[in-house]
Amino acid sequence: MAADTPVLLLVHGFPLDSRMWFAQVEGLSGLRRVMAPDLDGHGGARDRQPSDSIDGLARQLARHMDDAGVDAVDLAGLSMGGYICFAFLRLFPERVRSLVLVDTKATADTEAGRAGRDALAARIREEGAAAAAEVMLPKMLTPGAGEKVREWVHHMMLEQPPEALVADLVAMRDRPDSTPDLAQVRVPTLVVVGDADEVTPPAEAEAMASAIPDARLVAIPGAAHLSPVERADDVNAAIQDHLR
Ligand code: MLT
Image (cartoon, rainbow, N blue to C red):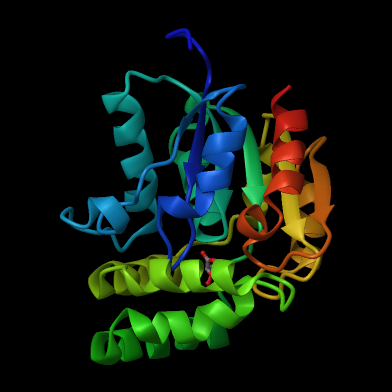
């Protein structure tokens, strides 16, 4: 692949690491140089200090780009990864060529949502990553997803260092509302949502897609929150269309 091939940067969600994008790394590498970093403290970056601010997480993406000598990327994020994309757009708008928002939302946490973050963080401090897995796994996949996939996602969750998960929860709890930014998005944007996503439901995706100028919305049938894993081919096809 030529050194000047454009880069697709994939940002993982909570409580996961970059392995959640394995099918996109494989399926989209013909079109783009794909970068899928682990956020500091997660997965293979577990030795690095996690960040508990959404801007701190966005700055990690800039660091990965700087390290790779990349000026601008097609930027894609799932859920928490999408919240980080919004922060990245605010901080480094000139470094985004296009945007893919997957199973995510622009709105901030409600009061009840913020209290839920604190409650889960307290449980993770006591019980470890298993508490995050217990809360999140049932929401990630539809009942139709195979047992092997469910076990694989479960293992990925259990492998995350508890400190990184607690930092994620603080960053998500305190993130600002990105809704006012949507009308200012000036890059081609694709919004993808599993039609059975209960964490960031289709209504949130529709609201984002209608507020971002010329955004395209693709609903993925038979997928819950983790559509890039559960319906990888459909998600890859949507992203391929977008990148072309
Ligand atoms: C995620 O999938 O990254 C998180 O579930 C997002 C959230 O809890 O808001």
